[in-house]
Image (cartoon, rainbow over all chains, first blue to last red; front, side, top):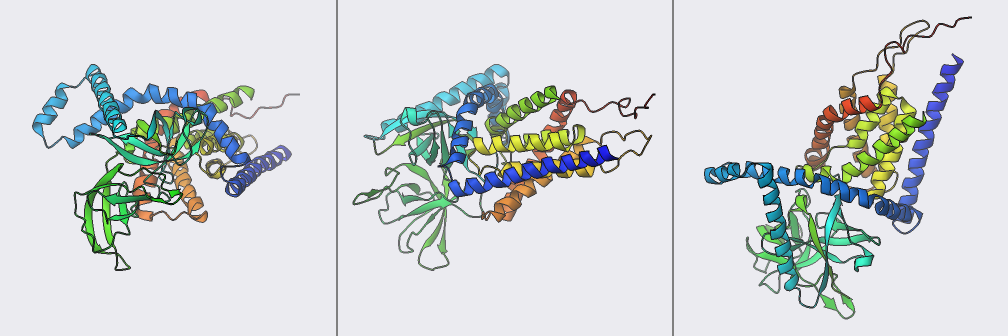
Length: 289
Length: 179
């Protein structure tokens, strides 16, 4: 009986201590942000786990490629010819070949995009890990300060033809960086509609819709239509300049509805060019260096 | 005891790495499987609340550190899950001279644990000032995460059962003190 009582006390003490430790860490984390002792722990944890994450990423890459190939199959269901072609390609060798082809296409698109950047320097990297839940929209990449990456650097991912903005660097260590994606509600980018100089506003994650962006603050008088391309606006007012160089593609306008609640501006939905679910290669731009 | 601690530490590390580096790419519908909660539930059932709570604390800390989430958030959730599962699953205790009851079935407790972890995490985020859209969060995070955790549990639980073998029927027979 005494032993059982002691065990209960010990159990409660362990759980109580761990809960108290969690709450203390949570409080410290909120008070210090990413600068103090807590930030140091996180940077060290990322540095230590990065090699293992790289290995896990590489080992699971064939499975991911096979998965994306298989999920492509479902979207091709209505097209008999395409399905037949995809069925012919069935087999491990074909999956590998297709994965390699897709990678080459991605890298080619990235190279093509790089050539359009002009004076802006850039550095290429690969995604190590991705946030496992919907509260955080971040990816960790395998390049950091040693490659010239700095906080707030814009990050671009390859698309079918070129490249598109996916977010900006929010944390950086010597060998890794954390990229906060455009889908994060806290991430605002000044953006405009291509070919319409007056259509400049702010783009952010659309509230209530996953994977869709919303271009805001565009006056009603400005003409914007579905199909228009949205790019970064990149402003400079005296010494204050946008982190994003102008002209980086973001997405395509999918719908333009009447007025917002203020009655002065349009409500514009934008579908991003980048597929945020399958980001593997990225280009970090260094616009200010 | 030490061997158990080493096994738990290794499992926590490997599952946390897999959770951030591998599973998000394989789950196109959002809300990836929660591998740490599988370990926490398994330990709560087969090793008791202390081991489960320590594993949950360490796993949560590692996950928060790697993903730059607020440190302590996932730990709080996992320690809570460990305590709840261990306490509720082992409500019946053997009386003097009775055979200890066998460990409860793991899968229903995994579903309960995964659900508790998802809702615990949601409550914490809301308390800390996030305002996620409830409908979207349910269909794109909570429901898929519970489903995928359960499906992966079908594979991982037998594996964890081999690593942390629950006490056999014979060992559950109370020892008779001999003079």
